[in-house]
Image 1 (tube, protein in one colour):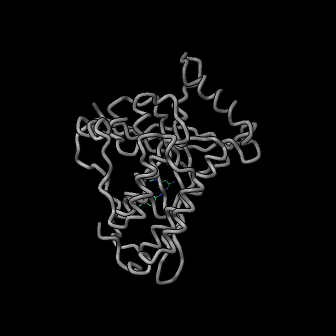
Image 2: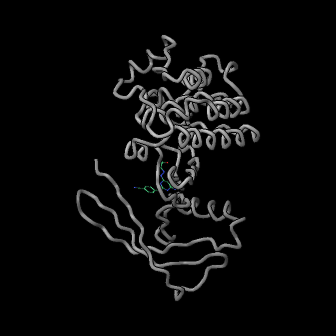
Image 3: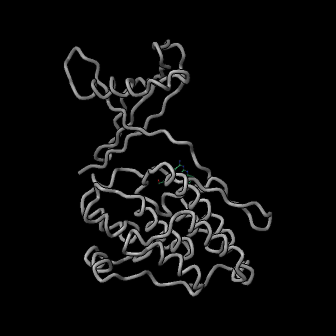
Length: 281
Ligand SMILES: N#Cc1ccc(Nc2nc(N)cc(-n3ccc(CO)n3)n2)cc1
């Protein structure tokens, strides 16, 4: 099996003229197969700014052409790129592992921002389905000494849970809610609350993955025996995490309650006592 690594690099050359609603660039597709580089000339078509609204038909046209082939039909290599805003400091789990010592109030600030993103999704009745520190992107590091706070953005959920194999789902224990394992196609809002609890745990444990190193069988047993993650010595935090990670979805707190509890954590004297060093647990 070879790893297909395909990178587009392209230079803007207006000389290629304009499509009706598109800008076109000449580029080259670099595939690496069995250690060999294959460079192919490609043309990249980008929907221009004031026609973003008809991206569906742009997408349909491209996917239609990519599904058929004939010697007199243009070959479409694919439309398999998602273009995202580049977030300066990358994923939170890696940042926490690298940094190690961020203050308790920094962590609570990040937790509150995630809670407000979840609150927004809850109001829209949208379930994300893949809340975890890996999918929290740090747009601004924030520096406690300068008093500037961090700024996070929740990434896309990736492939729909119902499309994933059972092993992938099991490997997402303990982020994936227990009820999702049995019915990944029926995602409810409550499953994001469970994942929020697991993400809080990551946040206050230096970005290390909970249940790391457990194989899938043991991860499944963790749920079958209704286990909880090792609780923090900060009881109010441990309470919030276990409320979110309640095996009964209906008993999990609403986003408003989560935000209220985070606000009271922020004012608790634990924060002042641990202003500088990270929580020991
Ligand atoms: N060193 C370093 C470094 C790495 C990445 C970025 N930036 C960025 N921008 C995005 N839009 C998305 C991501 N992601 C990273 C993991 C995921 C998983 O979803 N996304 N990283 C900035 C610095």
